[in-house]
Image (cartoon, rainbow, N blue to C red; front, side):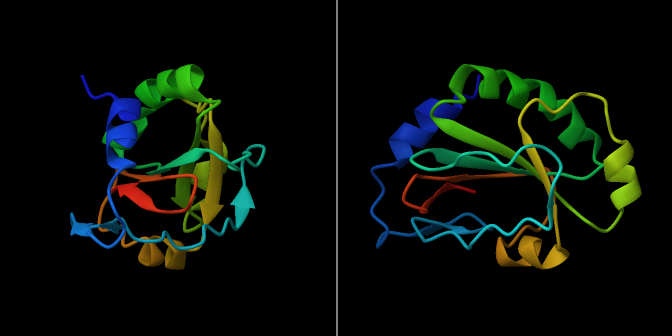
Length: 138
């Protein structure tokens, strides 16, 4: 089974000058600033924590089925990792109406430009950023 914390800790030793491209953002590079158009939950405290950005959409069944696992990871690791569900504002009424399954971690809407900044080619897509703002998984 995929262990997020084991992978993140293993990747925290990757030197930024040794970037690896996996088709999203380059591992080892500085992440773009995350700009929320609107927080759908309380804004998370990310200071000194890893950030796990879970890009999703209301019509993406794999995204929605993955929330149960991310909820579980959030419950176990919320003191070390800020989990954030990130969707666009292209269909806000669908996002506002979405309530099942319950997203137990932070949730936000943003402009499609943010997805471009993070080089999101498809969803679901998870990006892990370390406390210094360096991409460790994409």
